[in-house]
Each structure stands twice: as structure tokens, then as C-alpha cells.
Amino acid sequence: MQTRLIRTAILACLLALLAPVAFADTWNIDPAHTTVEFSVRHMTISNVKGVFNKVSGQVTANGTDPSQVQIEATIDAASLDTRQPKRDEDLKGPNFFDVAKYPTITFKSKKIEANGEGKYKLTGDLTLHGVTKEVTLDVEGPSTQVKDPHGNIHIGAHATTTINRQDFGLTFNRTIDTGGLMIGNDVSITIDVEVVKKAA
Image 1: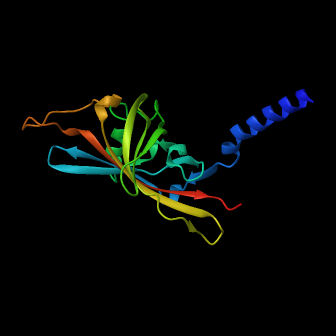
Image 2: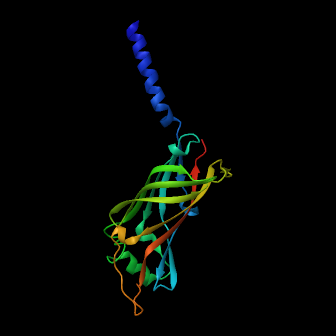
């Protein structure tokens, strides 16, 4: 009898531990409605912008507690697009992203903290050009949930951050005649993401 009670107690504990996993919601990034844009200063006088056209990943949520949200995203570095083929070729080469050697850019969340109404600080590890650094994004959202005609549920969010490209080994540069740099070191990143939870 005592042995049976012990087994029952152990089983109950295991079920309690597994319950959050069993009922966790998984949302997939919708690449067709997600934009990852970057902006960098050119010759100190203008900003050059580009996007990565291929992004994938998942968001796992357990209930409505933001601290239980886990985010993983992968960007195809070769999908870089600044609307100038020659510049894109240079950016994909060994002087910059070196996509042949480092084909992906990844982000994995570590912590989410409230930062006002509908705003959060999202901290995670960004791996770029073979270097992993902790970054923090300012997030607005998530939006209200919307159901599409197929019964799938969609939500969206907006996030921004700024990184120093030299921290990730992207150090190539030239000096212009005024003494400034051809390419700025600070890179502004703007993300508009839409995620989908498939209908049951």
C-alpha cells in the first residue's frame, strides 16, 4: 500500500512538471509577413537600409506569463538585400558577412521584462559572423490575436535595437577625405514580426 502511494506521488510530481510543456503554445514565424531591416550610416551623411528576406523560427508561450516566452529565430544571411546587386555581393563577401562561412544569423531569447504598458525588454544571444553577444531589444506588442479564414491565429510585434558591428567582427572600413568613416559602426535593426498558431 505504501509503495503504491509513493508511486502515485511520484507520478503526480512528474505530471506537474510536464504540464507546462504539454500545454505550451507554439507559434511559427510567418516569413511572408515578417521584416528584418537594418540601417547603417554611409559617409556620415546618409543612411543605407537593407533587409533579410528569409527568416524562420518559433515562439513558445506557456499561458499569458511573458517570463515563460521562449523565442528562437534564424536568418539566412545570403538573403540580404539592399537593392544594389554589386553592394549586396560585397556585403555577402569576406569583408563583411562572409555568408559562405557564416550562412546564418541566429537569435535565442534569455529573458523578457515588462517596460511599460504593452512594452518589453527582450534579452537574448545574437550570433552573427560566428560571434555570439547578448543584445536587448525594445518590443512593442504583442498585438491582439486575429483568426484567419482557415482558423489559424495570428499575432504581431515590433522590435528595435542597435548593435556595434565591430563587436561581431565586422571591422572593414575606409576613411573619407573629411576624416570620417565610409561606413558607420552602429547598425540600427528594426523587426516587424508576425507569428501563427495553427488551428487545432
